[in-house]
Length: 498
Image 1 (tube, one colour):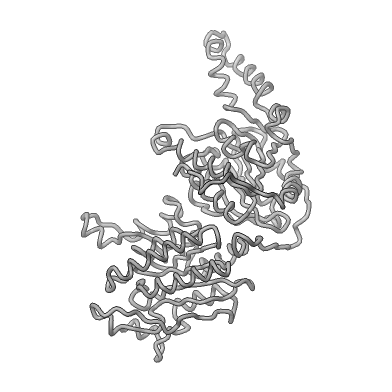
Image 2 (cartoon, one colour):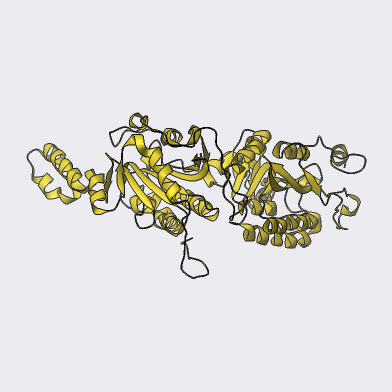
């Protein structure tokens, strides 16, 4: 009870200098927050809980504004019973989700909870099933952002995992279903919270964390930035932001940023920044599957979802993790009517036993399904190469609205080296000088098939671009597609290969 009393005022309300209120003040515009249900209390009578009550029951709910836009917020107060989630918490969060659907408002959860309140048993657990249900109902209707500011354990971890974005506060935050003490008791295994649920784990390995920030304040600040790219709901446009660079602009620097040699690496983030408004790009899941870059940029002041092959990582090949990452991002953008721009420099799918046994066929099918099903405006540009099955996955000429290629790009069912070795294996084996013959055959293959001009003549790409005209082409075609009407066949939903 000592920590509870220290964190609450004489009237029982949370002190405004407590951690939960500090986070809320970082999040919303100054003076804009209105608290709801401030006097609610739990009704548990078991295990001494009846004598441990404070107004609000350790959960703050309410509404405020971020850059003038209304949002709904709930925040756990770890200073009361470890931020544990009670039945009353679930009722109030459910009420907030109902409000979000009725009013079309984003929902932001500041999570710092030790899990379902054990004192209440099944009462709390059963009520939270309604929170999960309503979170899913709101998915794709209003943006839902979860910020992990401390521990997020057990049942309390499910709701954030259902939301659109998870922002973790670095070393201060963890997420796991089963804590170290329970694991030790059940299995004898000794682990730390960081090993099973640290921010670095979820940012790099599981992909659960979309952002891994340096502390609580930076995590909350990032939410404000992120929301600036998102609409209020799926029927509203994204905010238009004009910082003096929304119009046409040539991009000759791309000629230096993208090396001519197909195997020379470069950082595609430089390419994205060069063509985006004000050279700004908010990368999402930067540490997870970095061979495929995903994130938000603006073109003409409006948000665009960008997927880009990253030659610095695995040569830009697609693999299991990047396919899953890309599929989720495509579906997110499609949910909120955010156009997609795909920049390809991809040798194909990563070969090998590990990828095949991990299910690369199914993972690749998820990305292909998501991209084909998305009805938002879709542009694709082949920067340097697009080989194998990765090409129709990321730049499906039937599913994209427009596909372009830079003038020196190579497009082929297989890279020239592999194709020549297969097609001419007998000739190469019998040649007196196989190296010289191979070079000649490579040149012949490139001239006949592995070039963008061939695809343009066949209609597989809509045109060839000079590097200096990439931004202008993106702006022009996004403007053309601004009023695109998407349609899908009559059905309950598609059967994405999960």
